[in-house]
Length: 470
Image 1 (cartoon, rainbow, N blue to C red):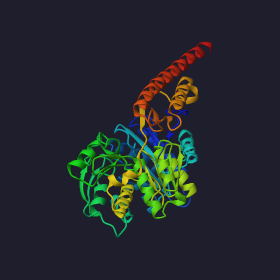
Image 2: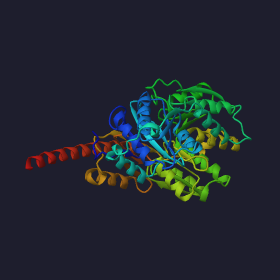
Image 3: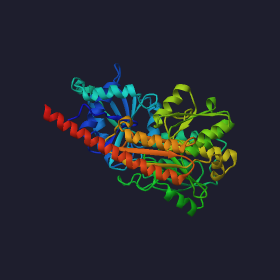
Image 4: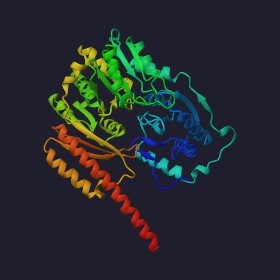
């Protein structure tokens, strides 16, 4: 039975352990029903596209979603393994009413999730998610029985990857070619394991591919955007010009230069924003990123005569602001790069083509281009938590953060946040002395763990006392 107090949607859709609430077949079927009812058309059947990454649980959830959708009269079209941005693109291109991606992105194989796109290819608003959540927990799902010809159908789309590959290649300038470039591509054993090699090879590159043998459980396992060390080694081994690392659903990009050095999303954004500025393609000379991005990125934009605007963490927050203000480029340190005049969400393959365009046009190697930004040292501590207690309820931790911020002042900062997709907390420190940052981060992590544990114990004791009073 579903707990009505449980919030399903996090910062990026619904996510959890596969075959466990809320990613169990019964709940996912209800989610499918709710999506079908929410997007239901009066005069025609609702068209829903469903894509997935390579997790073995994708088969289970794909069928559950489709069953729920068909049971309320929606027609579903299964795309098979396809990057998240590919689902967003095809939702628009095939004029579907909604697109659904089954993926837990960069998480391990035993997790899975659901991301939902509306007809315009953008992720659902928070208001829409709240209404869907209300439907899922309501009795309305049982109030719409249909039968006979009103039941929806389910079909497979065989050329989804081909359609998306054509779109990607069309975004690369006709006067440029990847001929003569050696590229190592790490597909993270994920959704782009066939697509990415196809695109780069057909644009002329000599490619070497790793992380392209998914078995249902090796997605993101010591490979891809979260683990680019193996890619760096291959770049040096093959004397490649660049290494490209995607994550499980291929909406992130991390790169490796020809010298084996790893570049994160901030560095990619610095290179691309400079290229955009030179060609008058950066709307209002503004780059959009999040609180996590390195302070050096602010300095880069100032030197170029532009500005940086920060949002809360999450590519959907970046995309929301870009959409509201019509900005052209944005992204996250983690590798989500959003080029708004070409896509509606982060796209690892598309971003790599944009980066390659910049390098070819400026006749630079990646190691030369990266010199535009000299990042400040950052230290991030990530740890599991049993519950996500608001920072204002953890006075000892709050005071500890204030004390460290004073020590790092004026150039340093501290950011404490909970993951929106996992039961984890993260503490990020930025400053000038990495050794100091590591020591402060260790201390704050210990304080955070102690504070959260203490809060949990106090809460449990109060519940016990309250039960005795009653």
